[in-house]
Each structure stands twice: as C-alpha cells, then as structure tokens.
Image (cartoon, rainbow, N blue to C red; front, top):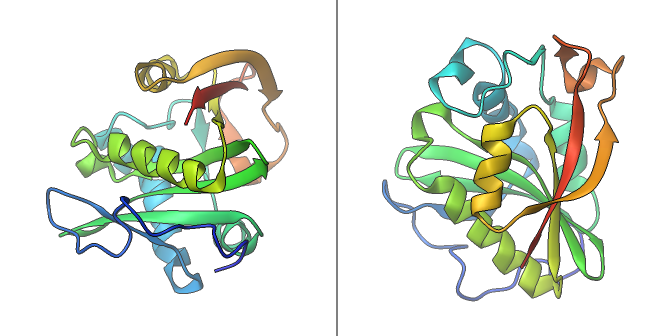
Length: 194
C-alpha cells in the first residue's frame, strides 16, 4: 500500500473482519485485484448488465467507464486507496478514496454489483469512507456526479451530501470516460461532512 502509514487505521471499521452474505468486509485493493475491479465498475455502469441495477449510465454513455491502467494508477497513487467490499459471495463493491488536502477527501469510482444493489452496501461503503476520512483528519468528503443522474444525487443527499454549486465539464473527446450519447453532460460537485 502506498501513502502515509496512517492511511488506514485499525479500529471500528470492518477491515480484516470475515465477510458474510449479509455484512460486508472491506479491504484495500492490490494489483492482482485490478481485473475484478474493472469488471465490477463496468457491470455497475455500462452495458446491458448495468440495467439490472439502478446505477446504470448506459443511456448517457457507452464504452468503458474505467480500464486497468486507470485503476492501477489509483491504487499506486500516494494518499489514495481503492477499497473493496466483499461479502460471502465475493467482491460486491468498491470505491476510490483519496486525500486531496488536509481537510478534504475525495470519494469516487463507487460501484456496487447490479444484483447486490438495494441491500445496504452503498450505505456501508459511505460509513467506511467517513471512518477513513476521520482517521486522516479530514472534515469533508467531496465527489462529482453527472448532473443528469437525479436519482443518484438524491441518494447522496439523503446521506448528508449537498451540491456545492461548482461544476466540472465532461471531458468530451476523451474516450477513457466513455462515449457520450448526449451533448449536455457535466458533473456537479457534492460535499458532505465526515
């Protein structure tokens, strides 16, 4: 693992706990996990398999959501981790978490397997992210969400996040983010307390 030695602190989180079908355990992704992470993220957001859950972006974007090079870079980046959620059935979720400055962490690449959505894994992942942010001394967690994802934004709002008013342009022309199916995509910045 890269980053400061206190990146993950032992304590009340579920790192190292044995996973069960009803209660996820969390662990830090390693290089050997990259193919499984890519497959999970793709299944949650793109293509027909994503339509089994509610997080699909298949009507907004086609093509890849991430690739092995990107996930590897996130794993190796200092002050950055990719966290895996596992239950008795194996890998069911993941998120990227990064310390951006002394008081702010960034939460992204959040995915839950389509067949596992609605079972509380997203709430558990946010709880774990907040625990990690507390261990880093951060006070807020920021994220970006496509403006067109009203249902997803509403979910984050129910969990304490609010739109900051800031936006980030969608990187049209960069296929590493996918191929847009419309010309009005942009990201809104959400922020929430730890």
